Image (cartoon, rainbow, N blue to C red; front, side, top):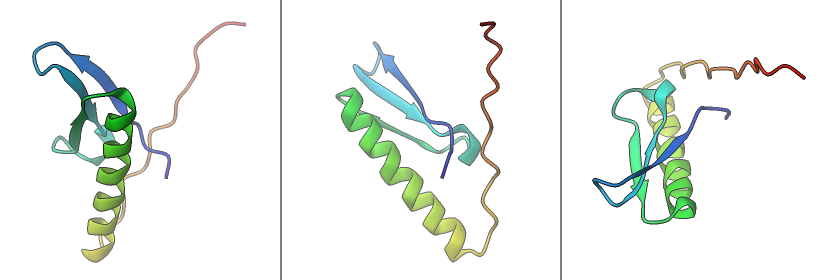
Length: 71
């Protein structure tokens, strides 16, 4: 699974906030450390994939990163 995972520090929440944009606006989690946020993101991703499969729904297409950097 190659989905986008966005991890950002939130001063307001005092933790790392995570979103998985391809999987919907409610696909969020958090963690006190970057590593914990990443582990939580993996758990959310696995859970959502399982839900999609249980409902026999097709998974959203992952977005592909297109580098615009010039060498």
